[in-house]
Image (cartoon, rainbow, N blue to C red; front, side, top):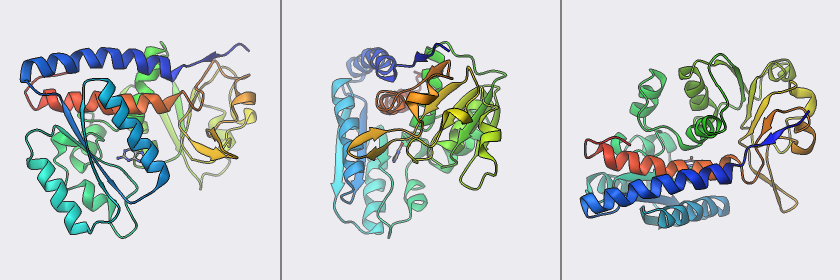
Length: 285
Ligand code: GUN
């Protein structure tokens, strides 16, 4: 079967070009750039890489990036920092990079972010809006997946989307976005029995498990669209959740790792920062 690789980098670059123009228009109109504050706590090397990529993407596309980096901080100090960012008129969007150190409760901290500045769409207000179908600020990775499918001309309505993974950051919100777009949705996870029986029914199969190459060709229906949201390092090489070389032979479309969903996630950080900045002025992106 001939397959098509969805080039996430190319789609992301084209979207970034469009967003950069809109960020520039915003800056000219309001005399300041849309501004994102990113909070990073601890010294997790993966977290550092993600945050650096977000910083570069913002700098290259007309978004002001303010980093608040702390090796160690108490929960009280972190809450105070977020409250200061909530009250800072210059700051349009706030991102607290997860996971936080073990002694700090992620949910408690996220809930302190003003929902209008919640660039990840992680606060209960934005999650509730998403589930009830009024989409406000949406989580960046799921939104990136949807934009990628749209830009590739892949229809979602009426399709059976199967998601492996049920995290709050990817699996659960992606299910909500597919439902809103009229897909039939199955969410599988580590306790799912007979995983293959579910995945083989997928028109669109999304893997977000963090288990390298766990999606094998035998788990995929011929002609399926395969979206790899995983990222792991094996023997110094970056790999996804999908056994790409074998699965590609059965897929109609497939995303690579790296160069698939990753660049789309970063682009959605820019998108959401701009959306937050405009919406604070009563405008829409
Ligand atoms: N850690 C892994 N992915 C994400 C994300 O999308 N947002 C935040 N804030 N932390 C993450």
